[in-house]
Image (cartoon, rainbow, N blue to C red; front, side, top):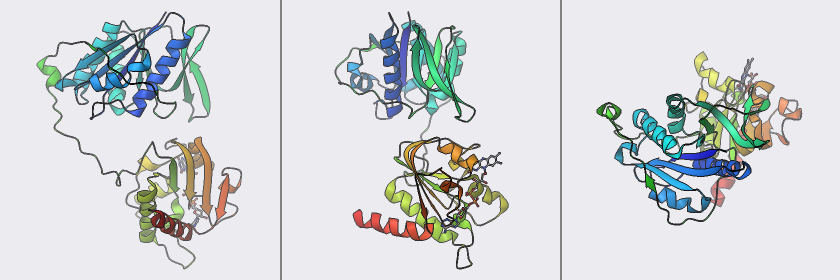
Length: 345
Ligand SMILES: Cc1cc2nc3c(=O)[nH]c(=O)nc-3n(C[C@H](O)[C@H](O)[C@H](O)COP(=O)(O)OP(=O)(O)OC[C@H]3O[C@@H](n4cnc5c(N)ncnc54)[C@H](O)[C@@H]3O)c2cc1C
């Protein structure tokens, strides 16, 4: 019999974000298939009433909250105290939480304090023979494993974007306040504010419907005998601004900066998709000026519909890696696409 604690922190507006609702769905599904188990919600934030009301219809047996200005922002020393207090108050045997930046920092420490274990980067929950399990990818997303544990409490951090968010009726719920004791040492770090790039500067957008990949071809000598990095930059940024796509890159393109060549300045190694880069999840992908070699396309594992633009009809995308390959000049294609998007706007 498991007591499953759905653990979430509020967003700055007091609500629960998409990744939290995905974790709630996973926690609820697990509770539904494990006989005798129950679901409890534990919320952390400056004020958690809005968040609790948002998930009123989730059939949680209890709504616990750690609230107050000390818990409004991400801070390891207070977050770990909050998580520990909630897990104890719920007598949780399993804790399911979204893999947000805030929880990724703190949950391993909380598991250690409670004598439990943690698994990160889980993609879903499962049950076999009444035993809970999680699914997780290994070896750069080439193998999927089902992991079970006997040690409790078991903390599970779910990667965002792997499951459907919970949807259900909002309402009015009674939150049971849990008030962990804080010392001055817990408050030693103060959060003085947040500095984040504006939406247009932020090129990695996990929730975007489209992944737009730029390859090294954008900086290579073009048919007129010259490279055109300035126009490449304008075309790519223009497309991102209009489409709100997420920007991916090949290793060759992001490595060029180390070689002192003309590069696209907004591109960093964080954009790199592939074996030694990321494996983003988006419904669609459009690759431009990228050859489509295996170490790159292995990062397209979770891109469902794939298209590529390449001058070379024998590029690797043509070897079964793309649904559609446009054999065309990406400069001309993106110029036209941007003009069409501008007309529609
Ligand atoms: C151990 C290892 C790990 C690696 N990990 C990664 C990784 O994580 N991610 C990754 O990306 N790579 C990785 N690589 C490198 C990978 O093998 C390729 O070298 C890299 O992906 C090539 O990048 P590219 O396609 O941008 O460049 P290129 O191979 O130089 O291809 C450029 C393409 O642009 C096209 N082009 C040029 N101009 C135009 C135009 N005007 N219009 C249309 N097309 C045009 C050309 O036809 C060409 O196909 C790894 C390699 C190794 C050995």
